[in-house]
Length: 297
Image (tube, rainbow, N blue to C red; front, side, top):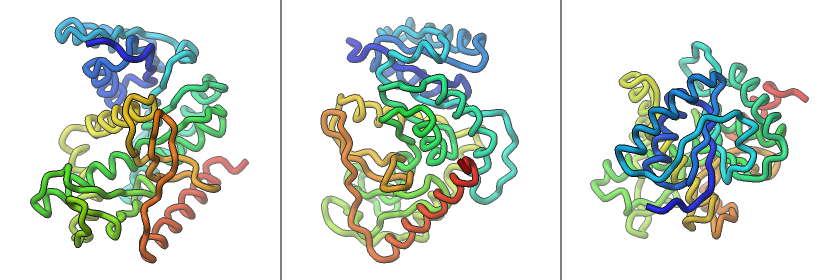
């Protein structure tokens, strides 16, 4: 296995940061993996664990513990840091971390101001945190991975309900990574043909799946790590294809499909019916109001 990139950085050594880092070591994507954490001892411990994995698997990826400022020369940085807080939300669960995580993301954006590589944000609420990081840092290529994961779950769920291979399903979930996610049922196809989507069952699965995972293993981690890897391959020009990512769309930030060609993204929203269009407008309105409350200036 030959590394295809120089360095990728991961900020955060918690559950998701650990899984993202391990996924990148196993993928042999970067030559070096630079790990930064609020606690340097934690970063060193994760690097030691990753070194064991590297030796056992023969991966060429060299993990190193670094400070955030050292990530400035990386081709991409994955932001998986979060504050320590107790989420008491029963609805809009991902919004529960907004006020706690905003100072963490703001500080990291300040530390990486002027960074010109690709930033993938995993920290929730991902649509707001992506916008916050982009506006403070000035980085031109900031994306949140929430709708990517939602879309993967949608295709998997619909394939199960219809009894078809997941690869046969083409469809998107856009808008908010949260309660205002928009299932683009009217443009969904199976084997290239329109299909009747059992929306009630799909929405129920998308709503309850993250909670079931978190209840069983403490936190979703493998799914987000897979979404990160897929988005990295497109945004770093290793593959061409479409990823549903949180990005600026007009005056708003929300999840939209981006078609990457040689690493360059172009928005490619599917045709929406009247109800889906209304849902997307509601998602944009909600996210805009939530961001204004988070950062009034």
